[in-house]
Each structure stands twice: as C-alpha cells, then as structure tokens.
Image (cartoon, rainbow, N blue to C red; front, side):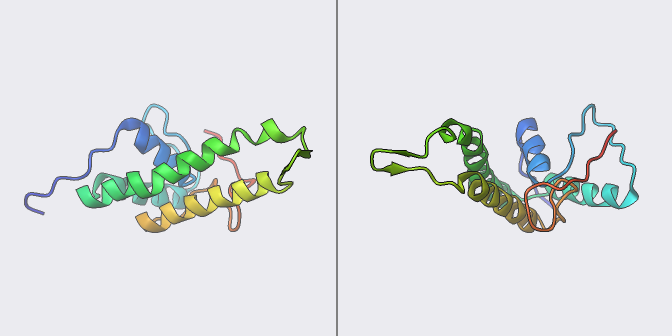
Length: 136
C-alpha cells in the first residue's frame, strides 16, 4: 500500500498481545516450535501485528489491551478476600475467581477474534488456559 504506515506497538504491547492471545514468549526472537501448525498460527499473529493500520492498532490498545490489563490485575488480588466470607453488609462472592477467569478468557478470545487469528496453545476451547504446555 502506498503511504501505509503500520501502527507502532511498543515491545511490551507486542509481548502482551502474544501472551493474551495464548502464544508463548519468544525469548531472543528465535522462534522454535515443535509443531508446524503452531508456527503457522503464530506467524499469522505476527503478520497481523506488523500490518495493522493506525486506527486498528489504536483500537487494539484502547479497547482490548486496556480491559485485559484491568481484568488480569484484578485476578491478582482475588486472594486478598479469601479469608473473609462476610463483613458487615459486604458478602464475599464465592465465585469471584471463576468469574474473573471467565471474563479474562472472554477478553482474550475477543482479542483473537479482532485480530482474526486462532487462539494460541495456552487458550483452551472453553476456558482461559489449557493443560497443553510447550517446552522449548
């Protein structure tokens, strides 16, 4: 495209998009996967990230990364209320961890759908993470 300038993500944003989409960290940049189908999916993600328009890149950052950061951060604080069932009028949501994990998985899948890439091996069919792990 003549005059096309792709969105310039920071390295941290790129790492977070990969992670949220369920793909492993790339380390030193030498991508090594034991299964060719994973490589094809990962390359599709990388291509999309390197060729997003300014508008789509800004949408990804504001409408997808922002909620994902918020939900992920809230997951890290669930343990703070595990020792309290009820305090005065406040009652603990016994399903808080499950509900937040479901919201996190939902937003991760929405990000994959926005990018039109398949979820990576860390995302299972119905949850946030699968039992499949890649060791490189």
